[in-house]
Length: 487
Image 1 (cartoon, rainbow, N blue to C red):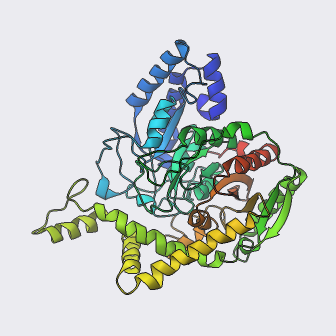
Image 2 (cartoon, rainbow, N blue to C red):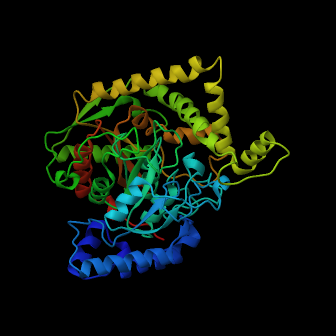
Image 3 (tube, rainbow, N blue to C red):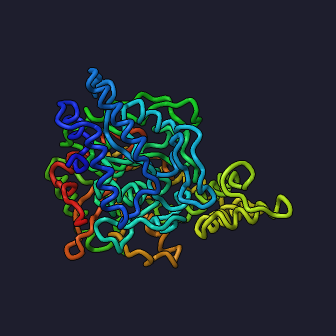
């Protein structure tokens, strides 16, 4: 059953000729048809294109091309439906882009193709990545494979559910305030948010341009390291892409962690943290201590202002970015007697309630008379939050926190209360505000309901090597990633 393998294991078997890319791809497609009717992780499945790419990969392998030259040759992956794939739908989970087909490849898509990956299709998400449960998708929610009455998280809920359910071997999502890490925690997989500027955003439909970053969702830390190597690097088409060499992340995994110091921020271990989550995190700290890692108490004093700052900055940037969806050039158009009426009718019909809420919030924060009081002040708070992290990293190599305050919640449980939904991001948003890197790895299951719990590690800017070393060492010592949902 090649669809159940990790990236690295499948690559090894492809290299030895023990399985073909067509067999692996067909196994994933069969799995999608078997379980996706109950999960709804995929919005589009490119069966013909995937099998064609798999046959091309098999031909390349027979001709002597190796995984040293094309590291993902023949491996079936899937992408969140706001990363452009030429010739495939690009809906962003929104009716305003229903039927729109991407006219070009995102940079990460090009890099996946160059590496030989087989692209299975498009994964569900909260509309324009605005949400924490995938319930805001215009095409219906994704369900958690551990319990289909519960959310897989968001906004990359389709990515996490598909990887956890073995519908694809890995996926690429995007993380604006935790949208890779939170669903990874809810679904018991690995989610990596790279440093801002490490991965090109060209071809990623923008939500909040100063916060968005594309990241891998995988079954293991080693697979995340492999994908990060492939998609990272400078891109002249993205002005925020940093011209910095890409380290051999996989080589760093086995360097050992003895002597490293991890910070435990007091502000993240407070009332409101589910006791089951707290217990799993405490056990994870003990495991790392046994590996020779030294836990150190640290303080990130401006953490309490992070949520408020994020929900001013992100909607403000969304207000500007989503102005392009007006019915004039592409996507939905609802006719009206004049241009203003057409704009209003198109956006009223095309955007869902959460997107409208954030556009209104952002427009208000940017409006004359309020810009300095809200947006400018939030940016100052953001500077203080980044400074907190940089000061903490003077004494520790990484910071350890829960990924989420609770395990996966019931579908519909928080959808009527935006504030309660926003609080799901409380442990993840600071990473994006500070522009640093973060990873979520499975660290336990709740005793009765058997729901996954995620451990978050936060690293210095461009400190992914150390972050991956720590995450890999923990994963090998406490193999929660081997637990599978009862789907």
